[in-house]
Image (cartoon, rainbow, N blue to C red):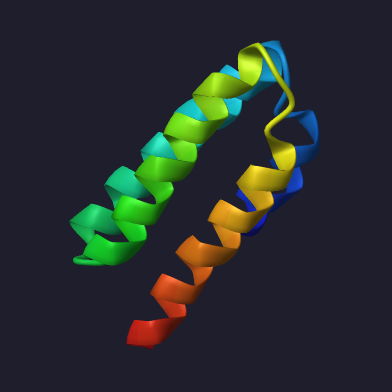
Length: 76
């Protein structure tokens, strides 16, 4: 999750798709660890990032990552 937060700064233009791919991969890992709500939040984050190739969505990514982190912390 920290790695995703650090990568948001580059998540625009071509970097947005790279961020989306990483967020999607993290969502799969969350799903494999029975963190279903976190996986949903990360999948949504990946979809938002994929739209970042045409406009700056970084503020939405920070909000989405905060939501995913809150979901993760709710279980532990």
